Image (tube, rainbow over all chains, first blue to last red; front, side, top):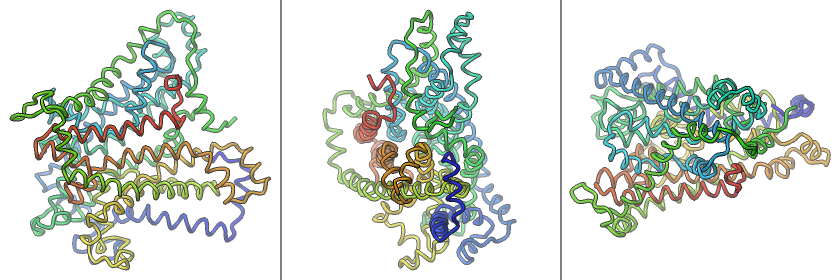
Length: 301
Length: 309
């Protein structure tokens, strides 16, 4: 994108064998990345038997989507809607709270010198790189002490701690917030809160979008944490529900009687879609933006 | 002026707030940080310390007796044959997934970047989309893909001699299967990051290389690759730290004690030995901490004034 345009156009005009080789390798790669998704979209249009008998990417009857959905609704009296609602609640609460906490913290790191700054910064970097799943069992032990196991808080509270968000906010304010502006504000008699409110925040709109996006995808897909924290099936999120459903289908668990199962292959594919489609939509909408910002969080000029 | 991203970033992160005396920011900064610091302590530090304490605790009737166990929990955990097995499982997973991940992501990034333009951008988007799959959704999709009867890759699987999904999803095949899965979901994100880094290479450098007679392959190998080494190191360490934690994949593929995290889970919830569970978790945390420290120390990626000092 940013490469010198003369170079790009010189290359672009070469539709020769080299170019076709280049393209065909990409097409081959795309098969690996895309066929599973195309299969997934086509799967609920077929009946369970048709999934085995018809060509894998063939489209059956679009109305089968509706019948697969109806079957899903009979599972546990439509408990899947409850799980979807839980997922949405946990995710939105986590996004909202994590962003509210992270942005001011990143702002403080970027604009002020204070006691303990380097220590906090180092801890932030370490915890941000540390894989979340490493902490899940220790977190369980802690939450157990607080008596919060099997509550929504056991999922939402740990998700509020979002060191990557703090880091990205720090980078954002370091680059996007001119120091002179703050100094000018101070001369005009703004206190620190007013500086943040009237200078920092208005410059952070893209930051909010980026953090919300990243936090959403992460929390929406979060599996290990709620899996460990939640026992009550009424509190499950969609990924946990999907896991429970999948392991009670004959597909993953051959000991389960196939005839009685309401969740067969098309239904399973449909739940996977429920989980994935929201994220894909956000991906596509925000794609250009994510690609540049996920890299550095700083590429605003 | 489109200054290259890499440079912008480096400058940005090294920016130090002005050191002139301020009147009140000290208290304000602490207030801005307060909620975050509380969370950092509660969910970043305390769990680790608590696990450390628990790992030396004895459990009698489900109640912990602190500091009573000595090294018993560690001995229980690290002499259990399943635990040792799980280490070798994860090790073979790393030995396959890391080289393939590295080579694959570098290859795709350089290949895309050989001819930047609309087509290249479109493919980058396509490779990025599977990143939406994670956890159970990813594993369930994989089940269909690894089953010769339902998979669009069925022809390939049959040609390789597989009759049904059970033959594909054998425990011994997990390292390869998880690599295929992980690359499907993860490669696109890294490709985007690498591509962005490649885009940041200044045009003077690229033009000089072409002037000097480098062909596409040579510019890729001699100029581009060395310049993205930092990102590569970053990717390797994050992937190692992440893959060691694998849980959902083996759990849903039906093997209970395949990965250390699964065994940590089993110790806690099936055997009721939280001490041994903590002893295993601590090892997982240590691996993550080790990777994190290496990244911060050597990559220069996070050169802030905090870590530089």
